[in-house]
Structure formats: structure tokens, C-alpha cells
Length: 269
Image 1 (spheres, rainbow, N blue to C red):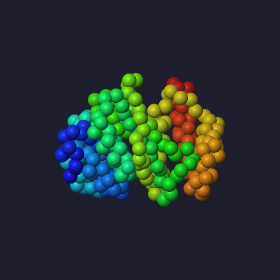
Image 2: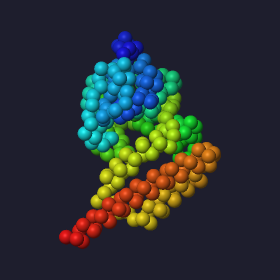
Image 3: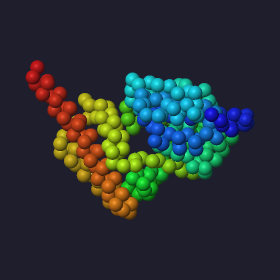
Image 4: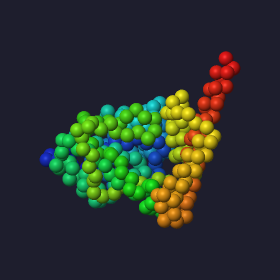
């Protein structure tokens, strides 16, 4: 549990925050690349059954378990509440910082601007290949910010930071590698939770039909594979376009079936 910034009092302090569940496959690589830049590392777990906790405790004693899953936004809020540092860097276990990105983060801590937060460009790797088209590149995510200035919203899924109007969002030099999925099994496992959360968040608020499920999924494929040049990613581009279209179809179908069940219950009353 070493880090170099504790000896640099001229720099602002950095807290790295993570939320995890069964992240053992990638956690060691993620944390080992971060070890030299943070002052505090907080990991909030939602009930892992693998070696996540064992690996995490090699790097920090601040490992907390909250298995009453409230959604991604609120779970990230929990993690931030444990931090006491000037700045926050949120990262997922399947994301790995590069040397250039680390230097950019250190530069921000040295300058310590009062009115800025920072976005990072991720390079996604799916099924062993870097995806440079298909609407996945560039992939900017705002992750570095002053702790007392902002936080994540309450969204169950697709959460984002609530950024005050006077705060400027600036890009950081250097990329972050995002290991999205190694195989189909992992892809299915990851997307199942997202699909359910998407429908949970929209149930009673958004209308859906079997026709909309088909049309939205078809448009997703056309958008990714043709409009976003997914064909330039080769067979991997075709595969992720098909999988993404399937995910959209399941989301809308789930929402439609829930609405149909609700209408039936209302008619039976």
C-alpha cells in the first residue's frame, strides 16, 4: 500500500474510488497501474464471491461491502463519501491507466485548478481486439474532479456526474484502456444487469412495443456497423454490432412485457 504523492506536499491529494463485484480477473492489473498516484484508495463492493477482497486489501484497508444494491449512481456516491482527498478519480476494475494518462493526472494535481474537471478518452478492447470504430471510439468519460464540487446522480444505470455550470470539462492527454469483455459469456453476464436496470429505470415512464424493440435494435445495428464504420473493425465490428442490437431488443422487449402485464392486472381488477 505505497504511493508517492504523500511525499509531495505541493500537490493536491487524490483519492481513487471504485465500485466492484467479482472483479478479481482485472483488479490486480488495474490497481498496480494506479499505485504510484493516489493518496487514498476506497473500494466499495456489492458482495463479491471471488478473490476481489483479497486482492483489494493488498492495496488498501478501505474496502467496504454494501450488498443492498441501490444502482450504479448511488453506489458511486457511497464510495465518494468515504474519501477525504482534494480530488477524486473514479475508475472501474476493467479500466487501466496508461503512463501518459498518469502524468496528465499528476499535472492536474500540481496545478490544482479550482474551476475544472477532466474527461478521459477510453480505448475499448473487446474479445481481444481494440475497437477503433463502431461508435466506441472516441469514448470520453468524465472521471477526475474536485471532491467537494460534484458527485454522481442517482441513476440505476448509465449514471453521470452532476457538473455545476461554472465548472469547465477539459480533456486529459493519454488514454485509458477499457477491457470490456473477454468472451461471450462475460459479455452476457455484464449486460444482463444493465438490461434489467435500464427497464427498471423506465418502467411506468416510457412506452414500448414489440415493434419498437425490433426497430430500435435494427437501427442500433445500422448505426454501429454502417454509420459509425463498424465494418472497419472487421469481424469484431460485426460481432459487437449484432450483440449490441440484441441487447437493445431485449431491453425494449422486457419493458413491453412489463407494460403488458401491468395492463392485464389493471383489466382484471
